[in-house]
Amino acid sequence: MICLSYSDYSHSQSNGRYRPISTDCFLLEFISLIFYPTYDLQVMSQYTHNCRLLARRCHQWHHVQRPYLSTCSQTGPKVCIIGSGPAGFYTAQQILKGNPSIHVDILDRLPLPYGLVRFGVAPDHPEVKNVINTFAATAENERCSFVGNVSVGKDVSIHELQQAYNVVVLSYGAEADRELGIPGEGLVGVESARSFVGWYNGLPEHRHLQPNLNTEVAVVIGQGNVALDIARILLTPIRLLQETDITEYALEALTRSKIRRVHVVGRRGPLQAAFTIKELREMVTMPDCRTVFTAEDFSGVEEALAGIPRPRKRLTELMLKSVTGRGQTEQEVQRLADASREFYVKFLRSPIQVLPSADGKRLRALELAVNVLEGSGKSVRARSTDDREVIDCGLILRSVGYRSVAIEKSIPFDHSHGTIAHENGKVNGKQGLYCSGWVKRGPTGVILDTMSDGFQTGKLILRDIESGVVSAETRPGSEAILRHLSNKGVQTVSFDDWKRIDAVEIERGRERGKPREKLTDLKEMLRICTER
Image (tube, rainbow, N blue to C red; front, side):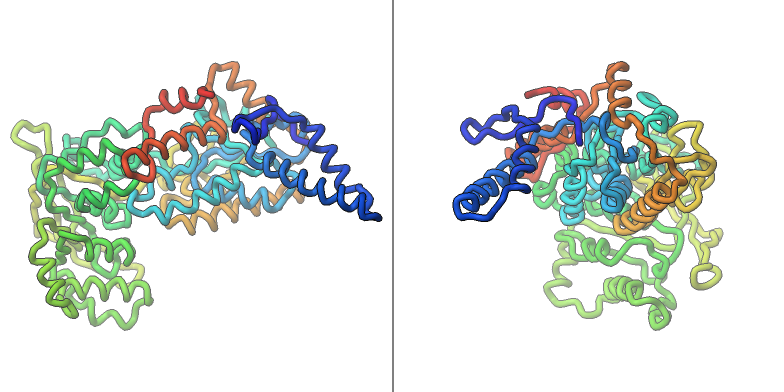
């Protein structure tokens, strides 16, 4: 049986407010319904009435303003997952599905769930965010609780969590970015893709970023989907961005932006491009924007099409069509000629140094080395030549990958790869400690890859619990941790608290004609959570 840390509530039909109900009464109704005899019409009528009554009560129970679930009387194993992004939720889904006695708590350092889906997916890709509906259903599971605004390693240690739970899963993603390691990288005007994406997506720690948009030319270093997301946000007509959940301060800054040309630079060739066809097609068809490739970069590419996989072939054919202009209608030719903005894709280029302005403080330009490819297939590599190019620009965005960091010194960590040291998701030398997602395999792949990875770790945990590798003894779970956090003065955020924040965001978005207006002030979020 579940013990609630404060009274249950159901929705009153009369006044729309929440009123206390008796859990015992609900259980008695349920028991009486199950065992009610049905051997005559009068009793059968009463049985039907009870069914309707129970259905209403079940509906009330499902829509209850659910508090944290105290695990004081729960006898099943307790699992704590650190990180409420896709990896955390997919791991939780697998565990909850595989063992009906397990209880899962999902912790996050922010008062907000969903991680990369909320803060990484581009605002003009709402269809990708639909996975949030699945995550919300998991969080609403009676054996699952979300506990936000908890910084593991600061508010509570891994050791303390392991004392309270049978299993602890590290799924906190990649919170840092890789650097180029070139001269001038620290100049004003050079930003990381992670901070820029966080800025327009409302990540609280990046809300005060001030990217230089008072320039005509920007360069994005890297050619993955994140790089194309950034280029698209910089070049998309404002009227289209106004319909998304991009933050209002980013929208205002982009409205004033003078950027008219974006270069996306990669060290290898067209056949090794890391972006996908969907992202490229969005750029090729963008209103008032012309996509420009360098024809010399495609030498020998058309002849290689026959031997490459179909997805790569389709992507390459789209690039070749843009290079040659084959199949373009008169209207398309005119649209490209009239475009006021340009998107340049530059292959076979590596950044050498960021050139400073006269005062030595700001960037002035980016110097590139021209590369040639050596090897073939998956072993192909780029080698720099003595040829150089310089792009005058006022903004450089570094998009060469994210990396995870060690959440605590006690966790074995592979700093060279930016991942936790593990074997198939089981942390090396740490009984009952597991990992999933980017912190496990590195920041690669899409949400579908993270789903498979989370399921894999979840299945491993289920097997270890069933086989006795992990102790299934009763642990205090959230009861001990919530008490510990309360004693330290930490204001935790439940999933119902998050729904209050969610409602405010949706209402503010409605006032602006947007799906939502994301809150970025942590103090405001916590204040909203306390309002009743």
